[in-house]
View 1 (cartoon, one colour):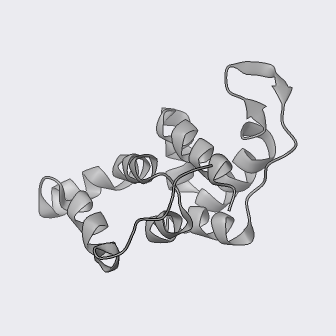
View 2: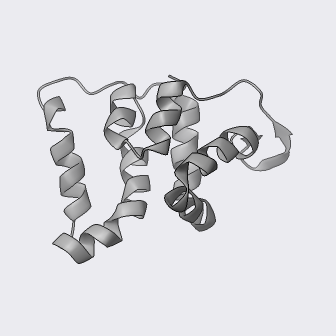
View 3: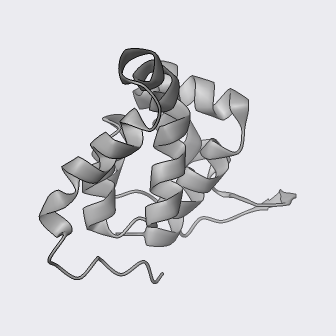
Length: 123
C-alpha cells in the first residue's frame, strides 16, 4: 500500500470543500481524477508533479466505496481516515441518530481490532 498517497488523498480531500463535495457525489470519477491530476501535484507547488505514486486496486476500490474499515486495515492514518468520513457522513447520521452517531458506527465497525495491534501508519 502507498500509505503516503492514500493519506495524501484523505488529507487533501478533507480540507477542500469542493473536493469533498465531488468525492461524496461521484467517488469513482473523483478518485480517478484525483489520482491522475490532483494527487501528483506537490502540495504548495503547482509547478511540479510527482510520477512516483499511484493507488493499488485495493486502495482505489476502498476509496471509491468509502470503505473506511478497509482503509484502516491497510494502514491509512486513523485520524485522517476518520475526519474525512465524518465530513461525508456526520450530518446524515446526526439527523438520523443524534450526535456522534457516525463516530460510534466507525468504532463499532472496527471492534474486531480491539485486542489487536493497530496497523502501522508509517510511510
